[in-house]
Length: 117
Image 1 (spheres, rainbow, N blue to C red):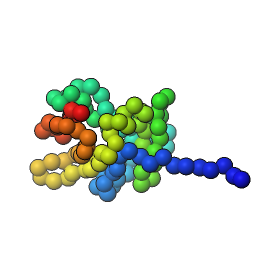
Image 2 (cartoon, rainbow, N blue to C red):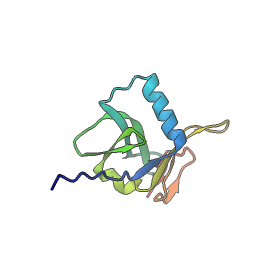
Image 3 (cartoon, rainbow, N blue to C red):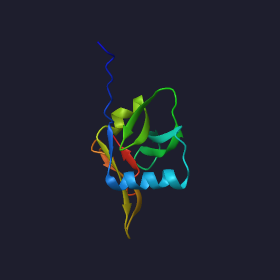
């Protein structure tokens, strides 16, 4: 009998556009393997909470996931707010940047980065 390894399924998903943009950023900014993409929430924003998205090192209380070869760090307590969320990257005339599609949000604001539960 060997040791079984299980991989936790990330509570968020990344679209192909988000993955491509994140890989570009990792290459352009020469982000080391010690860093991963931090996804989370914090108080504030016009609807009560706002999203955190940026490269960071793993901290105590984080769960680590891997999506499309990208390391993802998330504080365990944030999973409740982010479960089922899709992160996309828009590169159009009307909008450019990362967007968050959170099915758990009861309301959002026009900036797309703030929500209420």
